[in-house]
Length: 231
Image 1 (tube, helix red, strand yellow):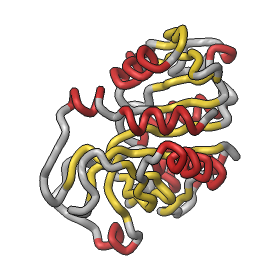
Image 2 (cartoon, rainbow, N blue to C red; image 1 turned 135 degrees about the vertical axis):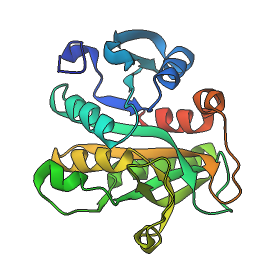
Image 3 (cartoon, one colour; image 1 turned 30 degrees about the horizontal axis):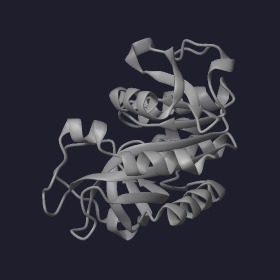
């Protein structure tokens, strides 16, 4: 049990798949897990544990933004002894050729935030995913014939903004989201593994965008990629 997760350590698997949306967590658990058990509903941050092809896995809500991800990733890693977290989220694309529903595997997360300074007085703005975990995801994608875009992502504090900082392009970011940097940074500091699989939900060039219901229920290719990657 921790401050924000009201369950016992044995109810959380060592590997966690982590969407931001609690309804997407519920959708994944009910559709893909055998005998899923709701082990946390504190603050409506739903967490389910069950079996996927005989592998025990937990599907947990991260919420929106780095502060929320920072809370749940830290508590899962530190208090519940989780070893691996795969973020399963959405992002906006900076490039016309990276279309809605394309899948991005994040290599490094860049941020303009001062998250690292607030965490431990570091001035870090670029942090890497876990190489071994990304390698497994790439190998699984090849077996499943899933096309991946592999590259960097901008983790922003803002969903709505009017200014694009040139450092974003200087760090070769394919798109923007709001959680991955916090997950990677905490995983690195706690010697854990973390990856981020993002489905493009909106294209910032063409202005094409998925509805909230589509984001909740139509990311199955990314979902099965994440789940098959932990076997």
